[in-house]
Amino acid sequence: MSASTPLITIFGATGNQGSAVARSLLRNPSFKVRALTRNPSSNASQALISQGAEIKQADGFDFESMVSAFTGSWGVFVNTNSDEKSIREKGLTEFEFGKVIVDAAAAAGVCHFIFSTGANSLELTGGKVELTAWLEKHNIEQYARSIGSFETASFIAVAWYLEMFSVKEIAPFFGGFPHLLDSEGYLTFVAPKWGGKEEVPFVSISEDLGDIVHGMFLDPVRCNGKVVHGCSDICRFDEVTSQFERITGRKSRFQPLGSWKDFDTHGFPISDDAKSMFEMTQESGGLYFGPEASEKETASELKRKATLKLGMSEEEQQLMTVGSWFRKHSPAWCT
Image 1 (cartoon, rainbow, N blue to C red):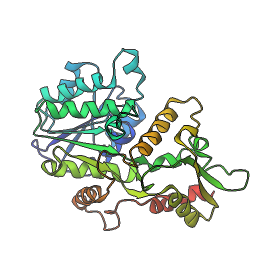
Image 2 (image 1 turned 90 degrees about the horizontal axis):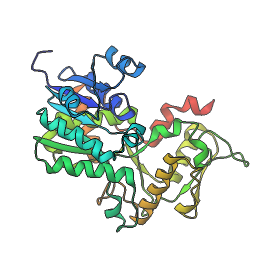
Image 3 (image 1 turned 30 degrees about the vertical axis):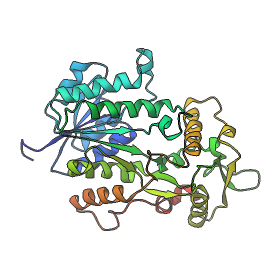
Image 4 (image 1 turned 45 degrees about the horizontal axis):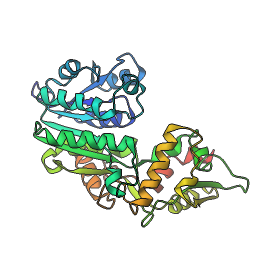
């Protein structure tokens, strides 16, 4: 690795998205990776060090700290955490927090900027649905576009995490699927309808997202100004349960709620966001990423570009489907 090897710095490197991006990039000797964290001694930080990342402590609230953290970076990937309590404790919005990061990247002379964004829910629903977390990210995206400081500014909007199905604590919010049997012996997925053609976009963060962003860095000009749909597969909720049943042999079904209003959040903020998401997709006719219908062809092309660079097999170059994801994890579901 030479001194001229491009450095990519990741803000949010120990989170789900950032760590996936770091893992993929660290397999490519054509890049160096710097991971930003507030706690370099954490297990997540140490895991990245063991894979070859440079760890740098940085405070996202402090402009000078962020300029220093981004200095020398050819590219930057940024994912801000909408649930970060310290943002609210400091009396800031996520947009104000993100603006500091964008300005610092510009001041540091970053060439290629990639941000994990969200859709404009107000625009998609004719002003009916204000999904705050997504709007804040959308506003950060618009600000990064407007300053004209980067050679390329690209964006990725991330679909419904397939990994959510692995979290047993989340299952009760959706009827118990795929962990808890109902009174009739079924693993029942209970949720509002999606809207439109009922085509729901899903992504495997651990299997696909890192490679998709990796592919964006390999061809930043192609992605400049675009919002990439971070999507592995698109299918209806009833197809999710039928594929799970076929793969695991466990009786499963989808039970749609009459309205998004019937979704029980149990008072948890993260569930409130999910409820608003269902309201948005119903009001938008199933649109999730923006004004264009969900597609996975771009993500497929970008993953293939990255995995070819990494010398991976033809099978490994493919995006996960919902079925292949369940199949890979089937021992856990069958116990």
